Image (cartoon, rainbow, N blue to C red):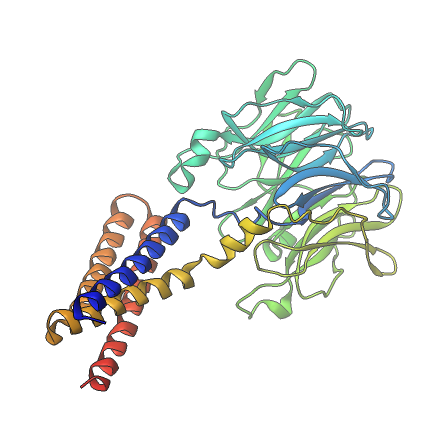
Length: 441
């Protein structure tokens, strides 16, 4: 093969590698980085009907999340929402079990409030896309829904927002929305209603732990330390995912187990607070993360979700129950539909194009350019592509600092990680060139 043909072939190979790298980079930048887009499995919240005859939950099939109901024994599974353009989750039953309120999330992460009959009929949207809704519960008469909300525009600003979450109410029939609080909470979750229907409880992170606040519908005010919990327990305990029992005598919640506090990955176990004796009892020792505890109404049991692959993403949950007398824990096996594998090809493409693929293609490209310089220009220019690569890493690092200071800290961190990756690839290429030059002498 002549010199010119070898040079042309080398340039074609470099061009192909460059094209593969560019396409992979563009795909990574513009593709949907959603960990759940091919996921099949349970969502993160559950609800139990007032007569304990049904459990409502969300379930993903190939990335599409819908609301389902099932009997407590795992049979009679029914899909009651079916919208491929949104993800439906966070179901909650009305006091008579006839309706379910839930969140419907669009592609921009904004959640609207929806209500539907328990058989899947008569769906109704209660809020528009101008508001982001986080959690919701029914009033005791079933005519009003209380929910946590924030303006969608402010929610999209993240930590730069000057607004926060507040408590709202809406009448199902009238559709009018009333703002109950103006506290601008940084975080606000886990609504519960007192047995008399006059007090709403919720949790907020105060910088040290999750605390339980209360809002009086009668007095229209917030109490930062819920009066049902003594101050000494508040100071000792953090309340994740708190849920009040139907009779108001117990509070289920999750917290970091004492034996896990020294670990880098906290383990959240299930606890029970007796609101009459003020005793805190640890119920589980599963050494995972427990989420969404919910009381049965006529049985002395709690249903909850065990995060079995804690803390990986997407989260894989197992539905469990615990008997509050015997502390016997059982798995609830649900007869759920399996993946259809309709997105198998796209899933394989997504799995094959990742940061490792980009790094390999980038190092191959710079390495080929180095060899090309050695053979077809001048041997002393062999390190030139590596020098250019190091320069790109330095410039990217400088840009990360500027972006973090002037625009967005998270974008700055992302650019900093990119700069570190380019620098690492450049080091590998330099080592390759160093060995290559000595082998071809």
